[in-house]
Length: 399
Image (cartoon, one colour):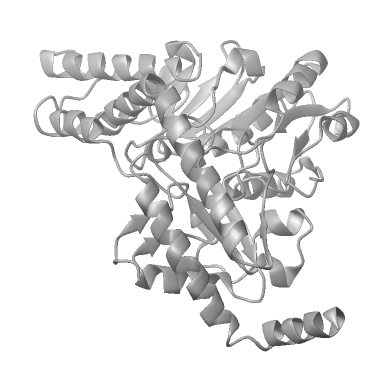
């Protein structure tokens, strides 16, 4: 029997803050605490730190520092991108294209825009949750002003063909936004190579602090701000800069770029070991998302004849932290909107399990999960009349 251990496999929800990030944040809370808008030495020191962080935040995604807007997180960045572009370019049209597998920060914002007179086209996705470029092209109209497609899916890990969509958007003169919250630090990102006009990412998904995010805005792109009250962030996001969070995400971005190859190789190894182990040890289970074109840290399984919530509770009792989908909807009883959009039946979508690895995970962590999980599934299925019926049906079919 496996020795009890604590294993964190919910890195898509949040990551532990890197020790180097914590160290620099403490400095700008306790020592160099000035307001970066002040002209005295305390303010100048804080301004210098913000400028340095902006350079690192830009370098991670191939942008220039003046194209970086600091926000309170990925959700605000997504809201600012969609609402800011919609209002800035409404004289050209009010048509926006997105997908059904986006994060709710996008879906709820497009719902808001729909209620305010914008026409939203929601594209189909295939069985892997992937958008097809030809569907994007077919949806474009003369009044299309914005396309918003995520880079890597937060639930199933599928990586979208953003570079191809970016080329299409550029050819048609349409602004292109990409939610890169899950992809940043996981896959190479170059905003110019991808052809994006706006790109968002978040501090707490790259081993930085919560409450801080980045919106990349291509130079020359118009944007109407959401908040007024100051000239901060080049008049694009009013409010005194949260210096500790900004230096935190700056350091996290610096580390993400520095350690990229080693970290991604480690995550990919653990991910593939987890996928092989789960599929090989549990029957009636499927891997959700694209089998190869997926984020290096993501696994998502549908385990038939059990409820995802029951699996999570039993894993938690064994010290294993996991999820059944997006952390932002963890209190919902509804099945994943991503899995439903991919065509999974309601009853199978309810049995989803997301295990996302991180830099601090080890082979021993995965071994422990693979030893514990099959027994949990077996126990839960022993109480399922649906599973009993399926076993009987299979026995009859064999005879």
